[in-house]
Image (cartoon, rainbow, N blue to C red; front, side, top):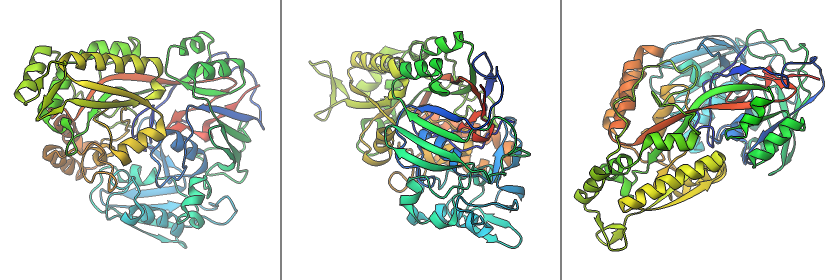
Length: 530
């Protein structure tokens, strides 16, 4: 069973992802060969320390991937978009209200019952503006309310505004025990488990050790808790260097690692099991907040028009990337039409230079343009996880814009720094960290609405056409609104708010283990082999 709960992914394979996606699996000699064995430790590499594990606050992909092991969800969404039970055994909804009936016998890590009131309190906590959850507008619409009937085991959720994917969004929230809902310190440490594992030892920047709950029986659908090959312990080991990670997988010292760079060929040649997930790789987002040069659409268009996107795609992906057809790339992705063709900027360096001239940015004797005495100096951030390929792509953009008369500083940042820069300091002009989402509604809070610290519209986008299109789409259940969702994306492209230029296949390789993968590895899917 391939379980995919549509949690958004902010910033793709690199950084702030809440990804939910489909994983195609290929097995080889290091994967499913051998005999299933119980009682093993499953060790997975993570490239950076996750920092806080608070599922109400974090949008870091690495943190969410660990939370996946600790906290249950009301429902799970399969690769084909169908929904199966998680904490809830049944549900019904429209675009404004959903009712979930919980399974019997749900418990917290301390053995106390997980009640409908507890689940409702999770949703209410997220919806409360005072708590500052970035999930507001992403999975929980502003003004959403929830109530629990403990006797009937039902949770009734009334959305604050229409949500075309209400079950998927609310159903994908990580549910914590009632005792820790208002305890940020406990949540940051991964306490209050309602899922398959509990947090054990945390050694920051080294490893996170989790222990399986033997009382956990509420895996997705008809999951069997007595099946062979389930691990008793899971270790997330922090290994920043990808070559080192590959060596550890090949030696069998660790079981799994996400590999993006050229070292993955060594794992492929070894015939190891791996998952394959299509995700955004190359994507440029421009800061439109007041005072930034890129707040001017003419500047954004000129910057984009000066780039050879085909060459950039080649450099970033080693020739393996594809041209995006939309901003939503991973399952269930209900709207799969090509809405990008005709909207990507075409290379024209002369037109780009003329546009900057017309916008008042004149070329100085030092080769740098200026306007009203201020030089055209920009800062671009990109995920360090992209490694040498990311560095090369950033250098290509830097050299291209230098010829245009733009002074560009490029900085590779890890996940915590990326989050801090986009959602706190705001000290950036161009972000090359892509957003990965499974549903078009998940883009909305990142391209509209309040800006940090009051919201997640990190680029300060104010696009009436986008807002009108998503408002229309939200009124229609599921795929019925796909035309409107497509129009919304095109409103972003036409204003050069975002330039998607490359998709990549993300692969997680494994030795002596198999699993399925979505927003991180699905813990209930792990099988260990001798």
